Length: 225
View (cartoon, one colour):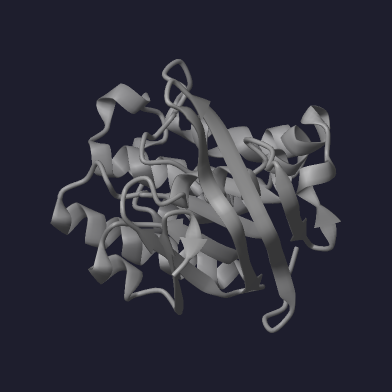
C-alpha cells in the first residue's frame, strides 16, 4: 500500500473536548485546527495539561470530540461508531504508546505480526524486514519480558508499522527510555515511517526530538499557540 506525499491525509477542524471534574467542566481542547500531509512528520508540543494526548487520542479514535471534525483520508472519524473506530485503529491508524503494551504470552515474532493479522494485512516478508531493521531478528523466539525496554519499544514500533498504516500516532514513544536508547529508537522509527510514506504525528516534551520532525504544532491551554 502506498501513500503519496503532498496529499492532505488529516484535517482537524475546530475540535473541542470537555471533561467533567470534581471542580466542574474542564475544557481540554478549545477549537483546535490542524492538517497533516501524507508522508509528513509533525511534532505536537506543549506543557502538561495542554491537550496534546487528548488530541492524539481523538485522532486515533480512542475517544470522541464534543464538537468539530477529524477527516482522515476524507472520512470523519468523529462520526464513526465504536466498531468503525476500532476498524480504523486496526489498519489505517497505528499508535505507539510510551508503555510498550506488548502481549506477554506471545513471542516477539507474533507480537510484531499481531496488528497486521487483526487488520487482515499480514505480510511475512514485511514483518521480517521490520524485525531486521529494528535489530530484532535474533530475538523473535523470545518473550517480551526477556527484552530490554529499548528492544520492547522497537517491537511495539514494528507491530505498529506491520499493517502499513496511513497515519502513525506516537505518544511520547521514547519517554521510558534513556537518552542514548531513545535516540537510537527514534532513528529507526523515523526512517521506517518515512519509507512507508505514512504521516507521523508525535507528542513529545523533548525539544530535541521535536526538532527532528518536519513541522511543529504547539498547544497552550487547549488551543494552538
